[in-house]
Image (cartoon, rainbow, N blue to C red; front, side, top):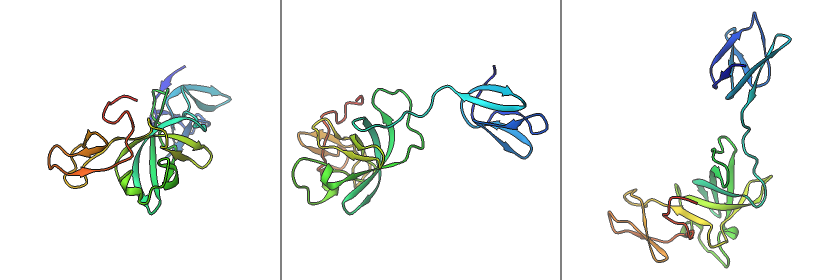
Length: 180
């Protein structure tokens, strides 16, 4: 069996019919996933090596804040703890202000901001809802709102080493450590 990468040409429509893991374009058949080519009865399939990791309630995930809306931060998920591959095209998760910390939080942007990298727990896998209430959950990397340099943790605040700006976030105990 032949190994193919997404976009690799497998054959022509005169020879085969595109099956699972393959697509036809301009009379040619291409792989849509990384995997092994299997041909049965003129149908060419690409059996993937690994599927996208499933997200379940209780999973710990990493993501980047891609939008802020009143009481909601939208998070593009990038990794799941315990899985060495990225979560490509899994969707956008939601972090509601009520799930950021224990206790009342008036303004969401005092806890997370656009482009922050956060570690969160999945509390609803079907609707991709997240929580950062636990001490090890929260922002693990942040950039300065003014000069865009990486912020450094000083106690419970973040300080920009370049411009001196100080900001607050709901910080993870893993902030700035690089591994999670």
